[in-house]
Image (cartoon, rainbow, N blue to C red; front, side, top):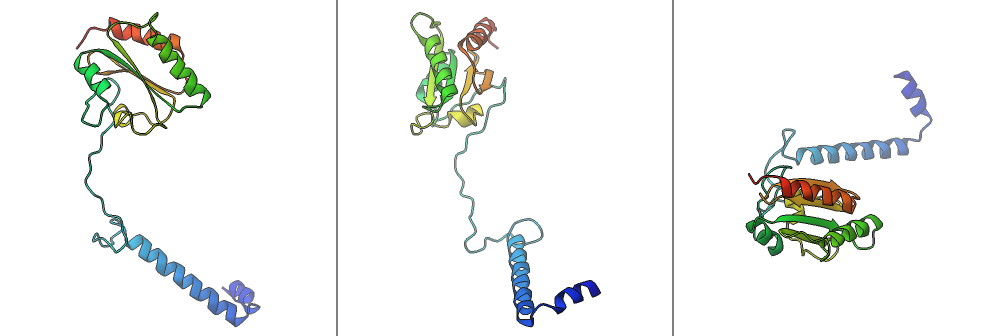
Length: 183
């Protein structure tokens, strides 16, 4: 304690008082901040200026192997394909990124008239172009680009890739999805 007294002895009284006031303000603000949350023993009543949750529709991610559930926010192309028991290849990309462009080209190549497989729907969504994909990214658990998801004819997620994936890998996964018996 005497070490602290020795160090403070050379500090002008005005600075000590100002430092004490600032320290007190920091403590008061910390107590108010911690006390305003719903945990830590504080009041659970909303405080003026505190955001309050408003109930809204929020889609949840479908675990791998689980059946995909669509809703009114899901693009019609996906809902229709699932209703018709088609296999769906969905890509999420950002225009102008090298890996994203390569993934979009891979899916476009598979969807070309020369390579397209009957009963498979190929969809690529550019996430920078508004909300054309609705809540599909959330439903499929996609959080970054490029991402590719294959939904089997049984409506279950068969494969998911985050990051670059080439045409050969997607094609092999499609062959597996086609050969899989519906459940």
